[in-house]
Amino acid sequence: MMSSLRPESVISSSAAFSPIIPDDDEDPIIRSIDVFISPELSRTLHLLQFPIQPVITSASSSSNKDNSSKATTPIEAKLRPKHNMLELEYPIPNSALGGHSHQQADNIHLTQRTFTSNAIAPVTHMALAKLDKAGERLDIIPLQKDVLQMRPSFKHLHNHEEEDDTQTNIEKAGDSNTTISGKQKPILFQKKESDRSASARRNSYAHKKASEESEEWIELDVHGSEGKWSSVRKDELRKIVCANREQTIQLAKSKFTDGDGGHYVRSLNYMESISSAFADPADMMVMGEPTSESTTTAGEDVDETAVAELASKLVVLLQEGLGKMIPFSVLRSNFHTEKVSDEMLIMALSSCAVLVRGNFALKSSLAQFLKKDVMKEMRDLMMLLLNMHGSIQRERLVRAFETKASTDDDYAVINADIITFVLETMAKLLNGCWVSKVPDDVVFAAKFPKFAACHGVYWMRKKKMLKELVELYEL
Image (cartoon, rainbow, N blue to C red; front, top):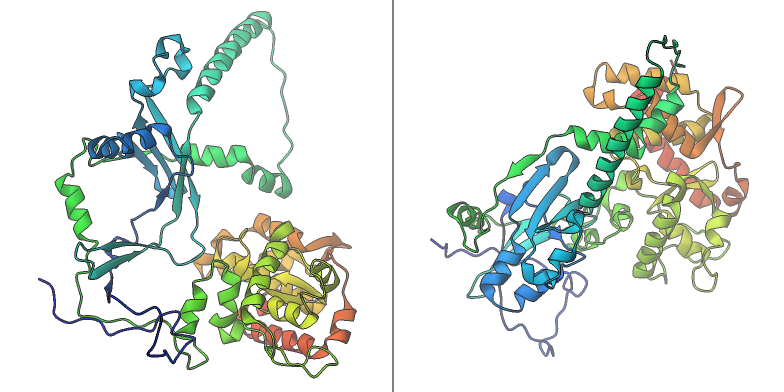
């Protein structure tokens, strides 16, 4: 039963920056639609994308509705949830073979086609929505799972090659056993694997593939393969409709300003770096200070949208080389001075990078090569120690995190190999200590002293946040 209560109106993205709407608007509102959030399916629902659409689907969809439903519904499906892997089997009609199926080799004479997934983590807010037939209610399901891009698999060709290789190896092994029959086999000694080689092995494609193959496939039930909706499918579709329509929600607001919803609108940006500058005041650089001899202050006569776009480009630059540190002069050389001023560049850098001994490094929260929060925290600690002492002792880091892991299981994932891997992205081994790969830059602090001081305040705050790990390191 539909409730007569409707949620209170929430401010739109356009209204967030246009508080006064004239009465003579040339684009009047012709319909108001109630919006409801339905979170029940959020943790289990995946969005599937087909960048390479098969011809059979397009041909079927243009004929009739029944054929379209059959072509877009797989006949088999299986999942590896740990590795976010999905495989779908689609039938290939004889009409798609063009009448030449008898001329094809056995390994390519297929009656069905396999599509495999490539998991893509969402970088912005995504949702699926359903508009009712009357056009008066929109139910939205926020997406929390990775987007799965489905692409054709050619494993049937590889399987044929592997069978030939296997048969060849068996024949060679048989000949070898015949030759050395009756002879004693030599004793072989294998050198102990080093930390570096072990880390390289774990990061190799072969290890990744073996890890994927070790997980068993889970067969999924496919509903609607006959072109009809099953009762189970109908029950799941009912969960799209919001069950509690009396509860109202409000858009997120900034933590440090009495904004009007602009914080939520900014968070819709595809680049996380843009929204991070407005997300947490403890992690935001202080802007609004003079950055040169001129009297212009940051934020004055500077287009915020242009700064956000520049920050997106900087994130791409800083991601290269696994987030290695880059001097300001190198970053400066990538942008024309007439289009991007020093002030504008520094404002953009303040949202996505930190200053380490005069050079800029990507914020750990934006480091895509680090998947867990504790690893990003470890990288922050390394940059803090470099900034404080100019060098890092790896053994102390290992001991500090081993001690921390004894009381907190979340830190058990950090071992000596991971510490070495992250260290190598920013530092090099010199005389028993790890020092920055990039020489210290004193020019930037001399040219922009107030901005450098802001970064000093940032590292003071970060030291308080990492106080326990710093104390464990310095024991």
